[in-house]
Amino acid sequence: MSIKIVPQAQLEQHNFNSVIKQIPLVFYPSAKTLYTHRVERLQALAQKSPFSDYLNFCLQIAQQQANLVKQQPVELHQSIPLNNDNPPLSLKNLPLSDVWQKYLNQLLQAISDTTPQITLVIESLLKNSAEQLQQKALYLLNGKLNKVEGNESIFIWSALSLYYCQLASQIKGKAVAENTDNSWLCPVCNSMPAASVIQIGGNNGLRYLHCSLCESEWYVPRVKCTSCDDLQHIEYFSLDNTLAAIKTECCHACQSYLKIFDQDKDPHLEVIADDIASLILDIKTEEEGFAKSGINPFIFGN
Ligand SMILES: [Zn+2]
Ligand SMILES: [Zn+2]
Image (cartoon, rainbow, N blue to C red; front, side, top):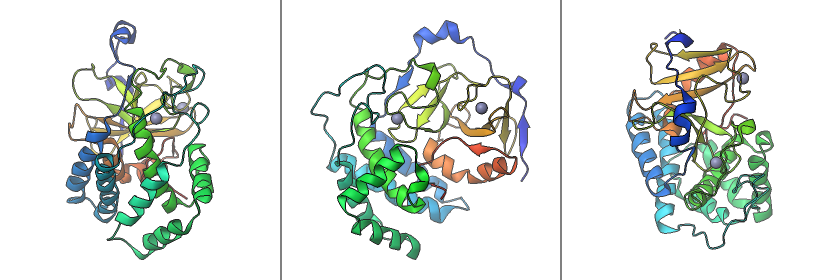
């Protein structure tokens, strides 16, 4: 398998100024359909992937997330205070409650078919106190990912994400997405993106970043580094050909990369599921000297 460079000249350019006033800057998630769709995609990918064991593990978590949205939905009773300096669901605007911990407990109970290593992680997390869990969650939400063991992070993040995704789905219209200084952080919850997505139909091939935590999507112009805003030194890699639906967008200015999923080329793509299934592209891109500037909720690297 070889890696190929997609020349920048072949990529579509858009006159953003003419369309920017007409397009939504933020898409809020629909928690009820998001997890169901992810489950279906993980099932399909697991059938033909060299990572099928891992995809099936993620599938168990996503299935339980889908169940919990239906069985124990989060209802937003209080209105969320708004401060235009901070995204509405950021820790600075909305301190973390412990509601997410009931989701963690249910996720841990739901995993049956797994490795001895993961079984040990589950047992260990079940013994943590509420204070310990809250501290680990705050480390992750503050970007101190190396403070929490990678496999523990998967479960904690999955529970947090389930909580934040439901909040995000209920605050439509209250997030400010115009602060271009921080275009690489989610305008709804201030977390890092998982990847970029070019949505299917309707939006003129515009690029949105997909939040790794609350699953909102926000607009960022194409052919622009989502980590340092550089416009000049962007290069694209793919495994197959120049028209591939999955590429890495690599920046020579800051040596970071993020994947970009083009649903117009493959309407079945689901950002989180396909990010795991295309792990080989990460390995090849990292061999070229780039470091990922996003988070996949199912892959914490320490
Ligand atoms: Zn977010
Ligand atoms: Zn950059």
